[in-house]
Every structure is written in C-alpha cells, then in structure tokens.
Image (cartoon, rainbow, N blue to C red; front, side):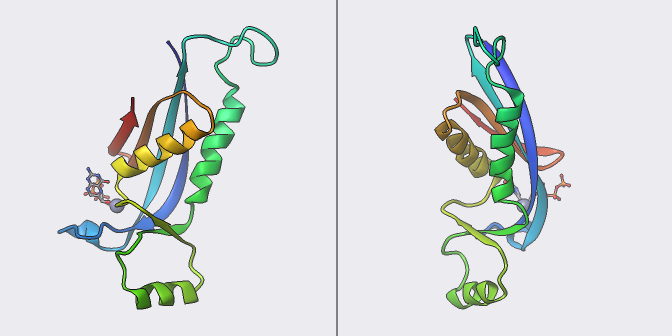
Length: 139
Ligand SMILES: Nc1nc2c(c(=O)[nH]1)N=C([C@H](O)[C@H](O)COP(=O)(O)OP(=O)(O)OP(=O)(O)O)CN2
Ligand SMILES: [Zn+2]
C-alpha cells in the first residue's frame, strides 16, 4: 500500500464544556492536522505518473481546511449562554460553532470526513493539540 502524508497547522481557541479541570477555560492551541492518504496503485500516465496524487494538490486541500479554523474561537454549539454568544458576535470575533465537543479525537474524525468528501482514500488523520498530544482517526 502506498501512502502520502502532509500536514498543516492552525491557531485557535477552544474550551471543553463540562470538563472538570483547566481545559474548561478558554485557551488556545497551535493545532496540527496531519493527513495520510493511501492507494494500492500509482497513476500510470500523465503529470502524476508514479504518484498517488500530487503533493501540491493534497497539501493545498489540507491547508485550505486548516485555514478555515485559523485564528478563530471554536465553540461547541449550545454550550454558551445566548447573551454571551451575542456579546462575542457583537465584538465581531471569528467564531466557528461545531456540533461536537472540540476534542482532538472529534476533530480527527471531522477532518477525516471532510478530506474523504474531497475524493481522497484517507487512511489516517492525526490532530495534535500540543506537540506531545495527538489523537487519530482512520479506518
Ligand atoms: N483525550 C483527550 N484528552 C484531552 C483533550 C482531548 O482533546 N482529548 N483535550 C484537552 C484540553 O483541550 C487541553 O488543552 C489539553 O490538555 P493538556 O494536555 O493537559 O494541556 P497542555 O497544553 O498543558 O499540554 P502539555 O502536553 O501538558 O503541555 C484535555 N484532555
Ligand atoms: Zn485544549
């Protein structure tokens, strides 16, 4: 099986609702998103002969996805009071509401689905919250 891996990073703030400990507080990470795609075969002709996909193409797709989440406040929908949301929005902060608790595991699954939807055969997505802590999702 051939594999290709690339990564991109983004800086964002989040908090874990219902968490007993420091991570219940609003805090930031430099998240690292690492994507591995795989294939049994390599392209046989043309520009990408001998490749699964051009690194440049995969790199751009992963970076575009990471950029969506760059310099924003990630909030699990429904976990802040309405008036807090209104105040944050009034400040014109860039807010992304997600339908899941924003853990590294849930992000790994989320990014896996997003990359897969672009037509890649994804074998593993890793999300690093810190250089030491990583969660992965793959099939
Ligand atoms: N399994 C998981 N556990 C935790 C997650 C997670 O996504 N999956 N997330 C958090 C918090 O977001 C927290 O920011 C990370 O916790 P921690 O590693 O304790 O934070 P540090 O930045 O201090 O990391 P160091 O490696 O200690 O520098 C909590 N748990
Ligand atoms: Zn965190």
